Image (cartoon, rainbow, N blue to C red; front, side, top):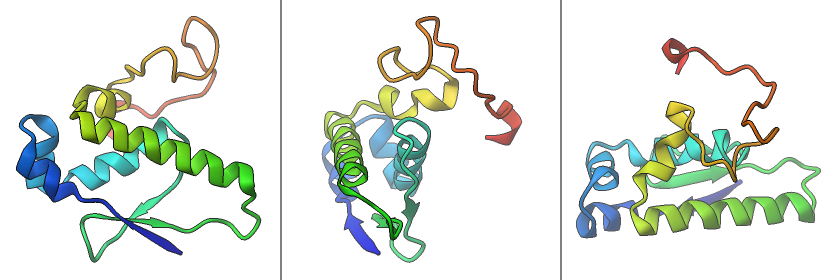
Length: 120
């Protein structure tokens, strides 16, 4: 297991807007994990004892390609957090992924079922 400690308090102290408010209420780490799962297709758990740590538990068969995907996904997440781009972080909650990130056809249809709004 690897723990990645994000300096989310820095966001709360230096930014204004949605990301700062989410961190003040202890929600930013959970939104970051949701982004990684739903947009980047990387399953990472938040630490239950520390509200700023990502728990990375790679499978035993993790290869270089998987590690590269993880690093690139974390870079995209950190870029979003640094820029304060709450719309990009939260778009997946509203089925409004930017076209470049949505898998599937040009029309945006993926063929995958999505949970109803009540299940989110």
